[in-house]
Every structure is written in structure tokens, then in C-alpha cells.
Image: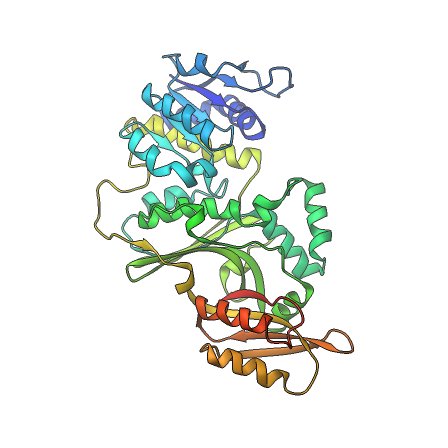
Length: 420
């Protein structure tokens, strides 16, 4: 028998306890041993919870209990759960977590502390989609060339509604909050930070790069406008909040930002609150993973899959997928060296000579235009919507600064990257 303690009995924690009870027979058959949710740790014992397990607010009672085999951490946060998990590992207890923020900052520290003690985290990325096991196990014979993911269901729902139904950003944000997809303070989702934490976990498994959120390019969807949607529709694009990890020589691009994606690509078809991840391996080619990225039962399914893995194996596999230093020594590409195509939205004075001045600024920064639309804004101004050929990030940033101060661009330019 394996005894489980659940730290944080919210939506996901309650689902874990109840699924372990409701599907007890099939879980035992698959794990080869009975798995029993024994106790849950909560901060407020007066709050009603739909579980039958015993509850306590004394974390030390659980950590000091030698009969508890596996700690399931679902409390959220960074430093407090880090200290709790460190203590659990020091007691020899296996750990399963869904805490992406914790792993974004402490995954390498925890890997060292865990050693041979099982430490699993499938639910930390893309909810019910088994992408962690796919990278660590199913694709382990491959060098991973790239990962592109839609990893935040809130943003994907908002962008889908903006493109398909013409809803503006403020209206769809309010709707998302009312539906429970977005928090009262939505910054973590719409600002790209949630997706960035997940990307860093995947990048460690694929490339063994130890980066923190502060080291990578992160942009959100707050500046997407109806003009951008019109450009997307005109040129057969979707707009997605895209997470990208891509190996380029001895460097790895790591970035999260809105992107125009051709509607012909599989990942562009991931709509609504769903998540999708495209992985390209050097031997297998492209594989695609699709499913619910959040929700109590979907996330709990991934948590319990990890518990079953621990029951089957006993000894822990390498947490981040590498048994030893494989000597690639990959580093994170500096943000200003990223190369891609770009879309620029410029509100300009509608008069003779403006296009020539803009073309001169772009040309001086080695930027060439591939597509262009002009839309009237008012009697004196127009919107210019431009798509460039492949350029370097530092050149685009320099050009944007010059355009903003050119005297003919009337508001701050908007840039969105294009991933063909």
C-alpha cells in the first residue's frame, strides 16, 4: 500500500482525492499496488471541501509521519512549497507537484535534492496532456529541434473569440473573468508569465538549459487590436500566444509572445481553452499533442499518472531526463539575436513623403517589407500594417525607436512576430 498526503485541497487536490477513491480498482490494477489518499493539508479547516479524507492545517504532522509515502504538492506559490518539498525529500518521501512557478525557479535545485527519490511533475505543464513523459521517455531517442506550444488556455480562448467573433480585448477579458478562465488580476495569464514558466520546464527536459523567467523574452496579448485581427484574416493567419524553444547551433531560443501563424499549420487549429504542443525531433519529425490544459479532473489525471509511475518504478528516474552531463553545453540565445519575421502596426500622418521616410528608416536597419496594408484611421491619419522578411530582433527594436521619433508616426508602434 502507498499512502498519499495532499498539500492543498482545492479544485485539483479534491479531484485527486476523489479519483483515487472512485477509480480505486483500475488504479490498483495499473499500479500493481493499492494507492490510498490518507490526509490533506489545508490553510482553512472551516472551508467546506468535497472530500472524505481527513484534513489538517499542520504541515509538520504530515512531513514527520513516516507512514506517508508520497507528498502531492498542489498549494501553489514558490518559496513556501520549495521549503516544504525540500523537507519532504530530506525525509525520503516521493513528491508529485503541479507547481509550474516553483519549477520555473527551483527545478535544478530540486533535481539535485531528489537524487534517486521519485519526483514527478507532469501536471505542471499543459494539464492533462502528457508532454513531460513524451519528452523524457517517448522522444528520448531524438535530438529535439524545436518546441512550439499554446500553453495558456485563457489567452487562447480570448484570441479565438477576438479572431472568430470580432470581440475586442476589453470585452473578451471581462467575459473570460466571468467564465472563470481569467483571474480578477489577469496579468499572470495575459502577460505571458504562466506560459513562460511552462516553457522553461520543457526547455530543461529538451535541452538541459537552466534559465529563469527573467532571462527570456516574455510578452503578452494586451496590445492586440482589431487592426491586427484584420491583417491576420487578410493574409490567412491566426494569432496565438506562442511558446517557442528552438535549437540554433549551440544556442536555444526561448520566448513567449503573440505570433501570427499560418492557418495551414496544425498548431494554428488549436482554439478555445485547449492547449496544443508541436515537437520536432531529428528522427521522428513533428509530433503534436492536444488536450485540456487546465481543470480539476484533467490536471488530477496527470497527477495520478505520476503516482502510478512511482508505484511501478520505485526508484526515481532522472527528474529532468538526463542521467549525466551530455556535454552539449547549450546556452540561451540573447533576446536581441532572435531572428524571425515581424508585423508592424503604425499610425501615421496621411500625407506625401511618409512612406518614403518610413522605408528609409527600415532600410537603414536592414529590414525589408514583404506585405503591406493601409487602412484609414481618421481624416488626417492612417494605419500602415507591414510584414517584414526575416530580420534580427535588435534591428527591429532600433527601427521601432526611430519610427516612434520620426515625426510622422503619431503613436507608439506595435510589433508582433510572425512564425511561418
